[in-house]
Image (tube, rainbow, N blue to C red; front, top):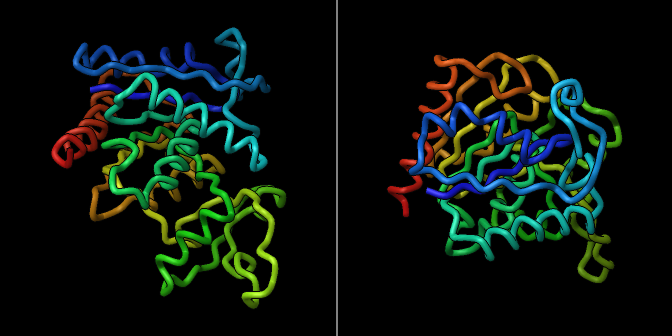
Length: 259
């Protein structure tokens, strides 16, 4: 089994390797983990600079532009195509959100991007307006719901709102392309592959996103959630590592069965 691994905002691949080192050691040589660095430098994640040296990287800024999201996706897709095949994607925080965005982007294709996905403390994905419109047309009966979002206004304003997605008449010029922040209450999109969600369980913005991301799992394809209650981290220790591996293996085995 081969997995492409995407790190969190303000870290890097070396840091992510350390973060999941106990998991990799327990899984052994039958699982290969390939780590991909983001291309942009940024501020370090909270507490990271006290433990790890830089550079501190990200795949795109916290609120990306269309070109920044497109470039980040292209980076990951190039590795999937040139160094694949990969059976799954493993992502932490922003890396999980980017993986989610790519998997949803390819959800209309006959062949899923990967066989399974494993999200650690995942963020909600960014999508393009045109993609949201395309997907909405497949779910004409979907009724978006209101949702409280504990985030700065600049992020909340980017959340999907179908009220401004479409021109009022066919002769009206379509809105310009832009990024939209996905949420399961405001979007019908669900992952077309088995998904494992390992999250921190703290009542903060990170856990809000991780919990909402888990709601984008598909009952048809399978969803497994483990809440380790340690916050926005990948915890260490024998007992919690075994629980995380159990959650991952559920998704991996289900993905193999589908394949």
